[in-house]
Length: 392
Image (cartoon, rainbow, N blue to C red; front, side):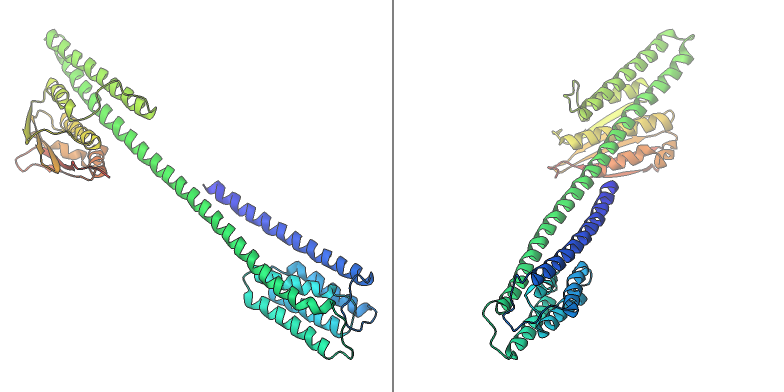
């Protein structure tokens, strides 16, 4: 996004340089046309005229070349163009080309949104030329300066139309830029949410499986010679935990590839398997269900299971010899899940780790809440309340 901003800045700088070159070319073109047209007698002011001399040529040159700064300094340029025009016709120099710089300056002021300046320049030139015509010794011939007022009005009107069109196009461009920026921010936000989801899934899956594997491996090593049968049971639990971890990893990768999952989605339906693994690792589990079981929204179902899974993992890793009580309470608009243990209360050391943070993030993500802390009678408790209504 920063690269695009830099590109836009460079484009604007290039546009300013291009406009400056354009204004310079316009100034030279107006000067050339004015000199050639006047010397070639291609127009007539309608007044009594005298031959063009050095002073008249200077007036045309100054007024024309001032247009190179018409966008940068519209007021001085407008005053110079109009003043030179009035002075030119006041001296009875020939042709109407000397009015061209004033017309362009008036149009430029209007396009820049300087409407009062444009009107003032137009009125000043029209009144100045009108006074000269009124004071003329002879009646001016038709044509020439008699059409000047119409050209001045056209310059103001056309300038306003151009300004409105440019403003409209600029608004459209700004809306397109804003829409692009919003899309980029939304994409970055979605990417961040996906990274968080991946991190949570991998954390919950791997830490639980690795904790079970670690405990069962220790048991197998201790019983390998003394009780090979129990050692084989522990190693079988290690194998099953590894198999399930691989299954969940494949499921997660399948979601990332937007593929169909070939296994059971994470949810409370998998709690019996979670309880079985915990008991195989030496943690007796008591499961209590209050209320009628009901189908939960997928997001809530997954969050509830992952919170229970992480709570079991924390007991396995931190509580030492302990038993677990898992309570699930179904209410019309809420499900409450509580995991309690009676261990040595070291589970509280996980408070600043990623486990409890991840549980809290999962609960908040579906509009719920999470409370954790030591129990007065010993052990640790994790309780979450999750809404079961339609999520928005």
